Length: 166
Image 1 (cartoon, helix red, strand yellow):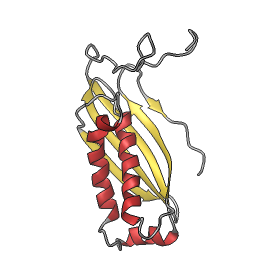
Image 2 (image 1 turned 90 degrees about the horizontal axis):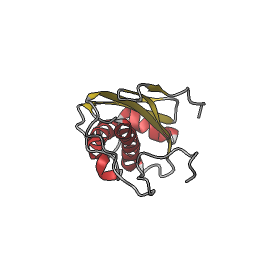
Image 3 (image 1 turned 60 degrees about the vertical axis):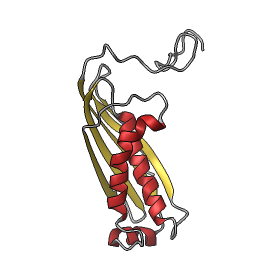
Image 4 (image 1 turned 30 degrees about the horizontal axis):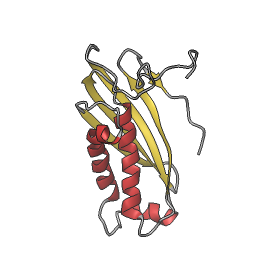
């Protein structure tokens, strides 16, 4: 790495991975909203809308999976801090006939943000939809996982620019 390149806070002076020391950081309210979508056949989308899967209510199970996933994020992302998750809201909507969009809001009062937890939530929600519907549609495709916004901490607020249509 050259001296002009930005250094990741997850690397020490020798370029070795490290967990960022947050002990001196003040506690603040942290929020993050993320989104992801899953594209499917029209018949699969109809089945989800009508609740007609053999495995049960797809969106209820995907919502529960998303909420649980937020709490497991530090087990999946090696240098992610284990933080208390104090609130999670998960929403689903069909963006069109074949694209289901998931959005998750995650909140905590802590020393580090919840962006990774929000991204994990929406990704696991879409993976759960895939798992519950794969017997009828193995061609489903996860798309566009991204952070929409975050608040709190030293870096302040972030709002993503509008995404191009998929």
